[in-house]
Image 1 (cartoon, helix red, strand yellow):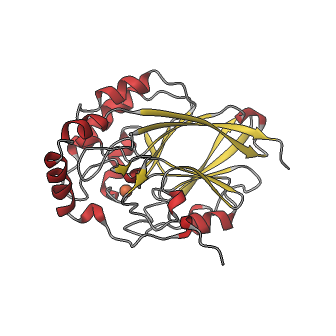
Image 2 (cartoon, protein in one colour; image 1 turned 180 degrees about the horizontal axis):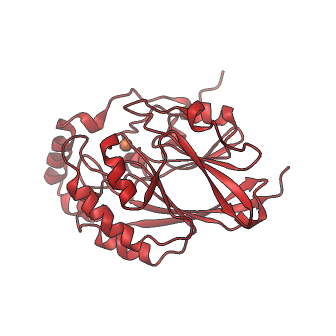
Length: 290
Ligand SMILES: [Fe+2]
């Protein structure tokens, strides 16, 4: 029997609900003189753009660009989100998806979150709109305000995207990480499975079920790619019940492709080491495979 390092599952702990962790990290960074650099890193965004071949992609969607933001934790972004807005204003895409965790804390008011999201909405500009799901930092009470901002929220729901009478389907799940209120059966009730299907989930923790269902693409975030990593981007903490090779970037599972976003914002403490914040564009391409 061969040993596969990617099949190691990390011991699970809800780090985001453990207040001592950010304090310990802050003390360590100060002690080692890394605080200034780590704080600056948190708004040094990296734009990740790549092609995703999709089997039987309708021709109208060949070259379709999906802007993927995740884990904005926008109320604690150091510059108020100014650099992020400036970068996004220059990008070109057809659809924007936001895979949860709009707010920083897991409790308390969300006024500042909505205020800053409103500024972000001013620069998000695409023909097929903005689609979001909730993460483990978010509350159901935020949904009317998020929708009033122009985000179409999918809570165990689906929607088609139509172009030239051709379509792909977006399915959005509620949080599977902490609240465990995801419902794949309900979310997929009305979809046309003969068309390409894209699943939005906050965390990479519904992979087996999604692949068994037959999804073509799984987009998620939550892990922040570790946020504070060893050289080479090796996560110290994964914070998700998944294989280590699903903690960031592109991956595949059976016939399903997936992408785990490293997060646009930061949680716990707005710092990053060896793990830059990310703005992703997934460009769908027709695959010749039958
Ligand atoms: Fe999260």
